[in-house]
Length: 252
Ligand SMILES: NC(=O)c1ccc[n+]([C@@H]2O[C@H](COP(=O)([O-])OP(=O)(O)OC[C@H]3O[C@@H](n4cnc5c(N)ncnc54)[C@H](O)[C@@H]3O)[C@@H](O)[C@H]2O)c1
Image 1 (cartoon, rainbow, N blue to C red):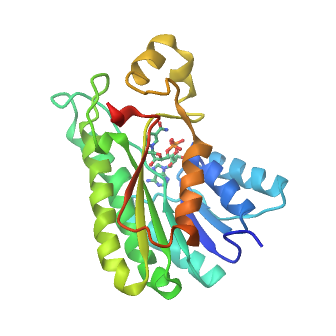
Image 2 (image 1 turned 60 degrees about the horizontal axis):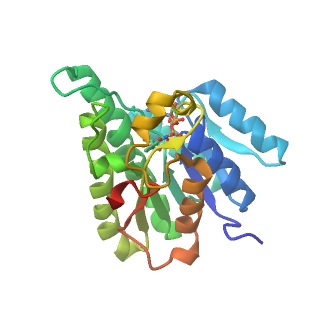
Image 3 (image 1 turned 90 degrees about the horizontal axis):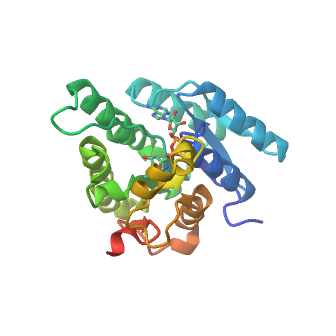
């Protein structure tokens, strides 16, 4: 028995950096993992990596969670196939960046669609299944929810990730009477296949790590380790919290 044996976890964004690591680590903990991503090849690669360890990645790709009907279909198919949803890990997102005066209306709306709207859709449609299992919602936010950036135009991203934190608090309020817990995780810069190039560029690395006490980016495993704890009964008294994992960025 492992600590999440018998649980069914829906993890969004399994075609990417942290979602892929989450799919692997939740599977190793005994969880049935149902993923999805807009990026088909990435999701298929994650499926291949799980199979190489003797696990299965269920779910589908492409799924665009910014479309409420696709979000609903992913969840209903998962519930029909596996009979339960215990853990909902809202990991997928994508943002557009630009200084406020230069940000287009389309890019603002795209960021809201792909960073906060999708979490509303998935949580809304999964809620009745989470009630049945007294489940857990884990929402991935960012230190952008808590502070600005001098090097990138993060207004839309900050607004959306701030909304992830406050949305999570309300999920905790509505979830407590029905046994659902909800926690957000606000992470600082984390190395993924998509962000590795920035770390290999000395000027970008210096700028992005400015203020990070540990003077290094985080690794996906360091975030997923916390998500595993939040998903498990070991965190049974935790709800409504936002957990910052940022190498000390917000400490100064
Ligand atoms: N990497 C970092 O430095 C960092 C920092 C702070 C917060 N985060 C957050 O961590 C989470 C995981 O990001 P990551 O670093 O693994 O990035 P990533 O880009 O590697 O992975 C995100 C995945 O989400 C998918 N996705 C985006 N929009 C989608 C949609 N509408 N429907 C379906 N799939 C969609 C993408 O295709 C991608 O595979 C995100 O919520 C991100 O905002 C990352």
